[in-house]
Amino acid sequence: MKGLKLTISILIITMLFGCNASSEGGKSNDADGNKVTISYASWGLGTEKEQNIERLMIKAFEEKYSNIEIKLVESIPNDKWNDGLAAAASANEMPDVFMLSEIPPGVANDWLLDLSKLSSDDADLAKVPEAVRKAATYGDTLFALPAGQQFLGYYVNKDMFNDANLDAPESGANINEFVDSVKRITNISKGKVGINNPMAILDWYPAAVSKTLGWYTYTKEGYHLDSTEFKEGQQIAKDIVTNDYAYESLTEEQKSNFDGSNAGEVWASGNMGLI
Image (cartoon, rainbow, N blue to C red):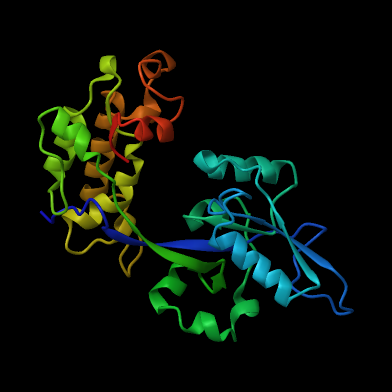
């Protein structure tokens, strides 16, 4: 069994998607040089006060292309991103450009435009690894553009484990050690929980236990959602949820034992083992 790295582990690609353009946007330039507005939604915007790198890049873009205005859509909740997009689509208020971590929901819900012609001669896209470009392509249709790449892992509250006289999981821990650490640190009545949400296990588990499967069971032949490895990952996630080792799936009564009204506050208060 491969070791599971808990701090910086699995490379993922976050995708930028073009969607059905609104009446305000959908074009990067106007033939007559008129002002164009493009609505944009991202979970990485932070707050106006923070002025993080994404907001600064948007400002720099607007300065370079003075006829283009980026309208930030900040009504979509980060913790329920796809649900928020679905609500926007139902209200015919879909952003022109938005972030998604998975392409299938966008394709299935007809949220996305064909970017093939738009990007066919793009020099920057040509520099992106072929595997990444193919991951966003269905048949001959390119539905997404890569917006960045990050390492995914878990932050571990070592103080919490030390206070409970337990060994904190470390980089290289195997799957059983990872699951045991989530279970052993949990004590709902005392406001302690192992993890926020175990659903990411479905993404990394197949690659962690198989030499042939990749992220979310992907190989060059496609996805293998009927594989033993994927089913095992599902069972582990289900056990964590049904046995109350994950904060997000707790009842409101159970959550009342915790310091904080959401997962971020519970983590910040030092009462969540991994996040």
